[in-house]
Amino acid sequence: MNQKMDNTKLIGLICAVIATIFSFIAAMMVLFADFGGMYIGSPSYYAYFCLFCSYLDGWSKIFIILLGLIFLALLAISIMILLSYFGKVSAGLVKQMQLFGLIGSIVAFVFTFLVLIIFAIQADFALEWWVSTGFYGGLIGSIIVGASLGVHFYISKKASTE
Image 1 (cartoon, rainbow, N blue to C red):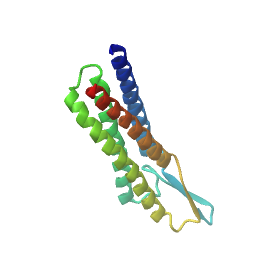
Image 2 (cartoon, rainbow, N blue to C red):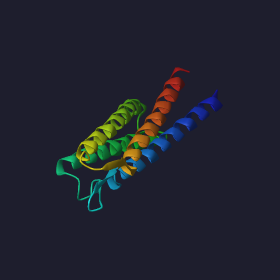
Image 3 (cartoon, helix red, strand yellow):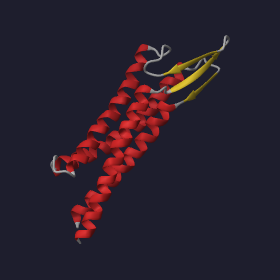
Image 4 (spheres, one colour):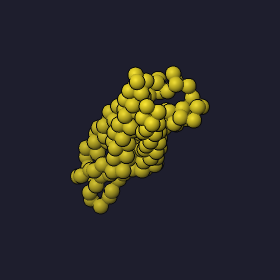
């Protein structure tokens, strides 16, 4: 029985570490990499959709910043869950943070597509456009963080019933 509890704690710890690492990577990719690019044409001109690019309209930067802040909030939640394994955070707070983390990862997934729609609207006049690192970081990051927090939530529920 004790060995099973140790394995459950180990899997939960691994899930918390994965969520922490991938939420940090996703936040950095969304905030500091380009979200997409476009080819405008004559003369050959490429423009990029990112936080620090010159093409991006001012109002669009707000959505990239908000997406980055969502991932930074997921990072804080993952760190709090991680600290619970070292006795620094109470178990009651961790249960709330798990639910907030799951909801936050779903919001990040949907918000990534919202930013994609905003980019597509701005790239409407371009000859071609494509998504890049920031989009894939937001998409894959939200999926991995959500999956690892979901497994952590399931394991903690299963461990509390036994």
